[in-house]
Length: 263
Image (cartoon, rainbow, N blue to C red):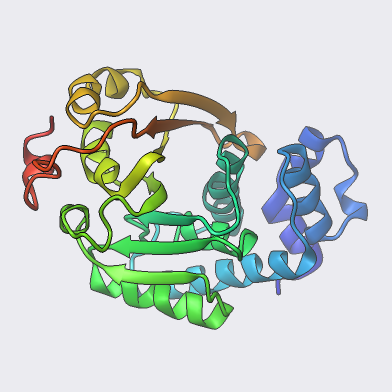
């Protein structure tokens, strides 16, 4: 585990000002706990230790395998860990749910969420086998029994009865433009499940280009939520798209077509 003062300095940045707390009198866990409580979330020290271990594993593996372009500890905590967890306040998570993290990369946001919610099942998906192998290692080392990692393309899963219409939520972070995500994700969720797209502040044009996909996939109009990352590291947008009718059998189209010819 990182040295206390080093972690406080690198992890929190201006977090003390945001929270109006004297961080020098707090442990790293207390700082993290305090921040999540401000967002309406709870965490215990055991889960914090697991998240901290995940950060260590991710950064170590990233030296030999390109899992993330973010290389500083502070940015990993803010732009990966906080950014994974803050949107939970907009979601209705319940025990027994099944959530897919589509295009998980290095295990973000699936692994931090799985640590926080051990009673929810997570399926982490990536099309790159080396990334899948790395995330499997992370899940094993962290003892995450609620995590399954698979190597597959979204179009293949959406046409597979084992996965089609099976998920409560599909998460997609930094995977593809929204019209493509809708075609990838909506076939995977059951009725009244929803696709959750992590986006930046400039989402309006992307949302406008998604109208045709929303209509053809028979989804409801998106709900949009905004939040800010700590330490002044940017603004983010969460777009939630609910499935209100059975997805037509023609979607998703065959592998590669949604990307080449978005709806």
